Amino acid sequence: MNSQSTCQKLVVHTNSPADTRLWAARLAGYLQAGDFVALSGPLGAGKTCFVQGLGAGLGIDGSITSPTFIIIRHHRGRLPLCHADAYRINSSEELEEAGLLEYLSDSVVALEWAEQAPELWPEQYFLVRLGFAGEGRRLDLSGHGPRPNQIISELADAHSGN
Image (cartoon, rainbow, N blue to C red; front, side, top):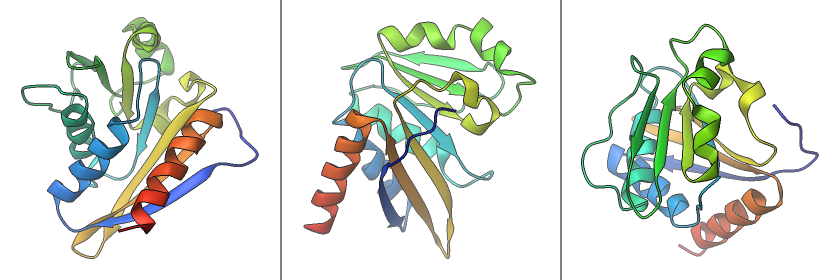
């Protein structure tokens, strides 16, 4: 994982899966090919739900399900989405061999259980930590690198205006 001296952060509390998907769709509106979204959090915290929102925001039709057993699913939309899951991998080499890094040239890459393979994270990335907060969820979004920082800052500004 590449270290950044500063990163822009946004903390959001959601009350339903629909709220979680909405925040992901908002982020997706800013994304472009080559963006990497690292997702972290315990089982059931909403990682796949967040990726479903990313997919909706990228104009992907059809269902988005966890790629836990196949490692990578690729979806077509306004921008292609590479949805990967590191939960069952034994090493980051498995993700490399599955072609994860090749998708960075033309897709948005969303990696669940990203903490399993931090050495694969590019220099600039978005980190989304999901956790439980009462009946809802807490989303900690952070940007690492100039462009992700700018995007998280814009999302934070829009959120504070609500």
